[in-house]
Image (tube, rainbow, N blue to C red; front, side, top):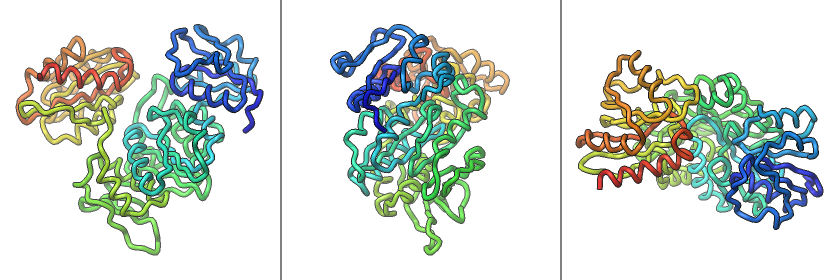
Length: 445
């Protein structure tokens, strides 16, 4: 698409907004950058690039002056200025849509409620064994628009795509997509599950044959999805006639009707959840990686920070940072993946979540629950209804770690897996995880 002399408003000056503005500027667009804050940490001088600044206020009064509006994933599409732009017929894109329009190479797009970052990183590492020109970007922390200029037709993009990015999809069409799972999350933004599911389904809305969508057969919601392209299933619980699955402690694949099932790897060799390994196996095999290289990539993978990250073991107690568990389903999976008794630290920002399934998962495994944040009272009320009484409240994360360290005994695990977002007390989940790591080392020193 030709952006020369197009008047473009870029809203939200975090990493993705700055990257999008810079890319558009290089493509000859007349760029105005907007943010409700005036205190922006710039990665470059926007005025030196010839951009116009509109900071400290909403752009309600200026939207009709532009040919195109690019919005940050952090901005709700229900904001008045976005609704106004849409009513005027002005295109409103997200950073992912812009990057797609300028991307010269195939894209693997990965979404879902949980596991996106792990699977995206894992797929990227495996794909690099097959194509060294593979890049990993998207919601994982590296804006795709910051990399587009360096891509060539023989490159490959592996992109994590969030529901916030999928709200503004128009023509975005990955060659390979994946919806890893779907459970309740972000209902404070998307209002209800029906809307959330519809938005997640946007990842394959433009796909057609020969594109491929990889879906989770074990998840009731993804199993009912109907992409208009070839579907490859993965399953941890069912031996599939076609797809990638676990059987007798190993991962197998059957993607060729002329071949027998192929053994990929034994589950005991994995350092990640089996579900994530199955999804990554399906995506990379479909993208042309050999079974040998898939297995090698799975074996070599190192767990991602803040996702069941082992921090330290002190006096026989393991401290594990799962700060990325920002919803109930992710926190349940963390509990299920740990075999030892757990002292659990949870709670945080309220996203209109039902915590009953989380409390139901405690069983006899969670020997003590320590709660922080906005949702502490709601979770305690849920515990009372479920007759789970071994809980207490801490003033903050540091006190929670102090309490956990005092009561933990050898053979137990202190697990930060909050089942909530972090914005009530921290900058983001990474900040929360970093603080947990710091406090654990301070308290156990």
